[in-house]
Image 1 (cartoon, rainbow, N blue to C red):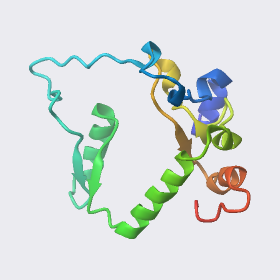
Image 2 (tube, helix red, strand yellow):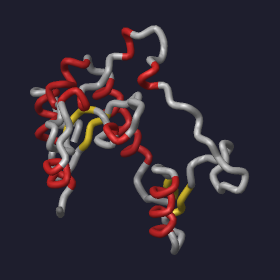
Image 3 (tube, rainbow, N blue to C red):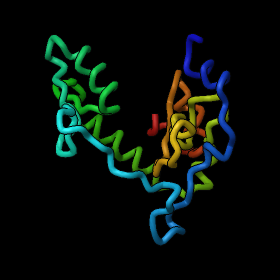
Image 4 (tube, rainbow, N blue to C red):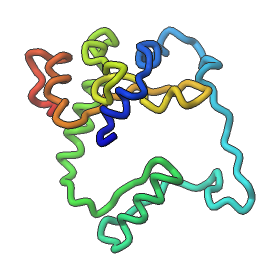
Length: 160
């Protein structure tokens, strides 16, 4: 398999795995979404007080550090990436605009069970016994304008 979409076609998930849960109707965290705290050995490098790695892209080992951060943490913070602050602020505003929409509007760009692109839950969700308190909008291979047009038919240009 060469692409994520090919992998997803080979391992599709059901629509129920994709549709996000409406937490606004729940007065407390459902048991289905309650995760226990991670257990760490005393000699573990990742103590409960650790924070995600900060990686300097000017570091000659940045590529290796990113790989290790992904393997061990699943996240990292980048510095010296060269992206202007106004670009990141605009992206954050558009994400806020997207995720503030009513669920029925976001569902117009619901990802299909055999795709990685579109709106929905994390594709890794079925591999865990507990559900994730998560919604996402995945963009792969130029799909952003196609999915944005579904959500904002007359005002999608600023999203991408």
